[in-house]
Length: 275
Image (tube, rainbow, N blue to C red; front, side, top):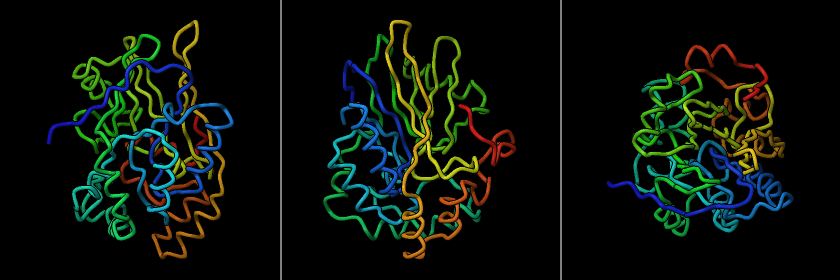
């Protein structure tokens, strides 16, 4: 299938960037409140995919997102749901703990989505591109080459460089790996805002997003932590008998396992993040 790329043209004003909502309605509500308090319009709020995921309110979350009017690309979960696939497409190692957990939360999410929500997924693009303060920006989920690529800060630059070279972009906004980070090299920026649906394995229940701001000195980015009603999200996961290990992560900020992480990021479990 050819990629669907939507070019939204020139964007002005502050931009709110986030991903990995993971069916966490309480976090999404808190993020929308932040945007409204800071006068960031919905058109400048951009999600890099996986609106649906581990938590207990997939339908409510997707409908809230749609009614907000924020923008999003497809994450691997949305692609799999749209196409009627039987797994989440996260590229977890077969037989791993993450793979086993996905066999619980993915069918649950699939069973809850309405026809209206499924139609909304059909309308989402693979990528969003725009210009900001003279820079070309592209929003991807994993990488431009593959939606489920796990790209971390420790990932060799050559793997990131392939996306810049293939798309001619100056700034890449990416997600999927669950950890916030930024990396500048050769006048380009790879920016992962983090996810709002689950903590970042840093020992805090707060979650992460980022903002972009054009200034007289150029584009500035800022990673920010989001506090939300994580106890309600936890209780709802327990109520729906979704993976208790993920539910516990909402409280502790520590992942159940580090199967997807390179050695560098594994060693940082429980360590406060300074992107």
